[in-house]
Image (cartoon, rainbow, N blue to C red):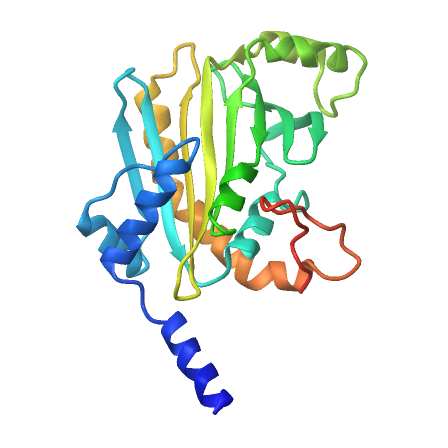
Length: 261
């Protein structure tokens, strides 16, 4: 009897997510998120449930371009979290990065992006944090990892550069870089009732100087599919082999370490 009951409950839990369920999940997420996701049409939701990447580009009321990528993945949100947040995976070949401060569920990061001439390099400091309140209120279904630009952040980093504490960065390069005026967004990870999960990455960025904002937004949008597909593959193929006993535990948004594989 208990075997059949278990199979019945599993079949119910693993039932495909229909549009009404998916729409309700996104509505509930946006109601409580610090940085809500774009509202989607039924056609967009259907495409996502069939495995397509949503690439969204929208001009906000403030005139800035909002870019979003969303993908329903064949893996858990925890594995996607590790694929994006494990420091073994997050370094960028085209950027110089340095930690400014770090504490549980919050950190500040400096980055300098090396751009080809005639464009000046861009740099920024962002404050990132975990929306622990949302994770707890949603019974661990919704994980949100937002960030915002730190005003005047370059002044926090300049002493580190002067002391030679930022590898690969000298003071002349630092001083010549343009500090971006806008940089905000979030990573989003959501459990779906059928065992799949939703990953989303959305941001508003203005790089300043002589680079058109629309050009930057279009570039980010065109790279969304490759970025999200790469993360899904990493979560499925690499993370289970990498994140095992002996690895430093990675804290989830729910304030608990992600279990080892």
